[in-house]
Image: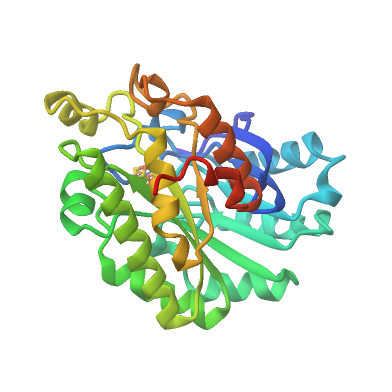
Length: 311
Ligand code: SF4
């Protein structure tokens, strides 16, 4: 069933992302068909398909809401709490319309599309290249962890490494960039130290894969929050899981600094966390570190966090 109501995007906002003025939009569409054990984003989406016209209306709404800022955005990050390249949930007609509207962003340097990697194809990359003169296209995926057991069994990600590696190669061949979410402490039985080590290993793995294929890489590091009503939240309760400390984010950044990979940290659960489900609930939460990380997110200036790095 296609619905033709008037809907607004789930989220839109401005930020500085690695030095660029970024407009972030999450469109309201049908919910993601995957069942990752830690994710409750589907609760924010629609249970049924939404027609292209309704999504195009959302695009118009965003353009209107930010009309004064459009000339200054350098980055446009778009998603739909799932995969914006999933044609069933974000129809081609709406996607083509979105690409056509990029002409309203005269300073745009990067278009970032959040999607499962399975949907990234050469024809989509070629379409964007042909229809725009953007310097860079970015694809943001949720690889989360290089540990196969954690990713496939605990997180139920159904995302094999060979798929990710194929897509990294494709992006390298096309001159596109990969941004990957990496989870800090994703296992319900993990100690803090294990969580830090695992995040560092995952960043190292992605860096190695991207180096092989000359693909630019950005890491979006997410300190795990326990999302309300998810299968993983039950496991976390069973094992008395404690969310990662904010200090551990610093340790991951410090421990991967020599890789020279930009790291942006997600410091907000977007109200998806259950009560006491994220680092903000911990006694170890430290507002000074949080502020330093917010600054680090903007410009990757290591001096912003240096005083919190332990030798
Ligand atoms: S994590 Fe991504 S792919 Fe998995 S269920 Fe959530 S939105 Fe879908």
